[in-house]
Length: 177
Image 1 (cartoon, helix red, strand yellow):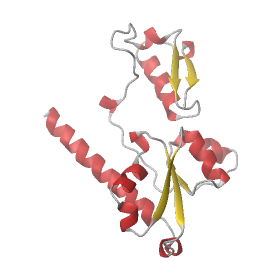
Image 2: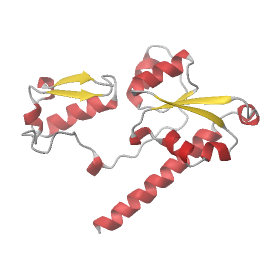
Image 3: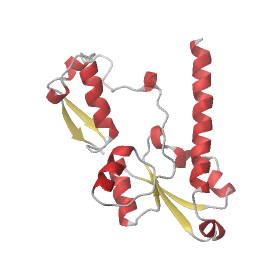
Image 4: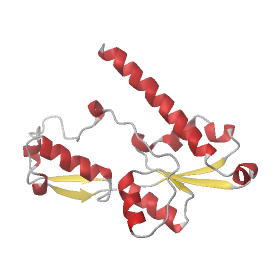
C-alpha cells in the first residue's frame, strides 16, 4: 500500500510539474511567443520545491513552445521577488511569503500559476546522523540556518519546533544563502 501511494504521488507530482510548466508557457502573451529572438528571463532557486522552470528547461518544454529562455538560479524567494521587481528577470518562481510582503509594500505582481505540492513525509530538518537533536525541544537554544529569513522555511521551522514540544521563540534562525 505504501509503495502504491508513493507511485501515485510521483505521478501526481510529474503531472503537476508538467502542467505548471505548460501554464507558465501559456501565460506569455502571443507577441512574446512570436518573437523567437526575445529572451524570457526566469528565476528560480535550486530547490525541488520550486523546480518547474528547471524541469521545463531540462525537458525542452519551453523550446517546444517556441520560447527562448534564460534560467537564472537565485539564492532565495526574497532574492527572486527583488529581481522581478527590479526588472532583472521577467518571471520568478517563489513561495508566497516574499511575494505577499512585496505586494503589501505596493509592488504590483501577477501570480501566474499559484499552487504547490507538499509531501509531509519528505519534509524535515537536517542534522548529522549522531546528533542529539530529535525533537523541537532539542532545538531550543540552537541556531538553525535557512536560505532566507523572509521565506516559508522559517514558518515551517517554527511550526515544527512548536509541534514537536519545543518553543520556537528560543531557536535562533540565521540566513545562509
